[in-house]
Image (tube, rainbow, N blue to C red; front, side):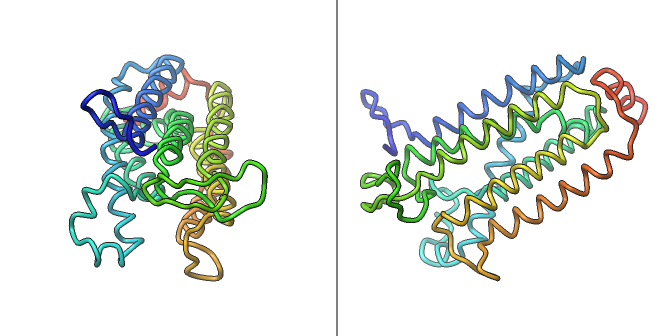
Length: 259
């Protein structure tokens, strides 16, 4: 179902889910700011991060699939399909880090606050991949929940793993865990580190049943990027464990002093 046909309008389901993901992330970010007693525009920050993430996801997809660019040329940049998770994460994180520094919240602190929203928003975005049938599904399977996508943007008539649904479940679970952890006393950067580890591992393992091409050591580009993400996350968690442990209010005071 790439489009919802509403009267004379054709609404792309991927874009609709992207919008819903952004709204949900903005709500969660705002809740996180309130819990941490931070007086800043969470909704505006999420909006900037979403735009940066979309740009990064599209650029990374183009770099990751050079043959597609050779075949379609520059119009591939405006295609409604083809967005890479890792590019979106890099650009989105960079946009949030800059805004955290600018608002005197702290670059790591704002990323800690954004982690639950990012995980859940990613999961919701995967519903868009599922509905549109954009090729993000997995390899063929005989499992009873295998699905075909004959009317998708990239159709398949064979029963395949509905990997976007797996990633939706992972995103919701990771987001819930990070939100719960974020309400406890811990060093700045710990929640971001856990986010990088958990999302990196989730993507690494789901890639084994996705259709992405293998490029090195039997791994896809996404798996190598996910492994790097997880390693950075482990290092960040270990580093945060050496820092003073603070609750939401103390962390905000420390960020204000540092700024």
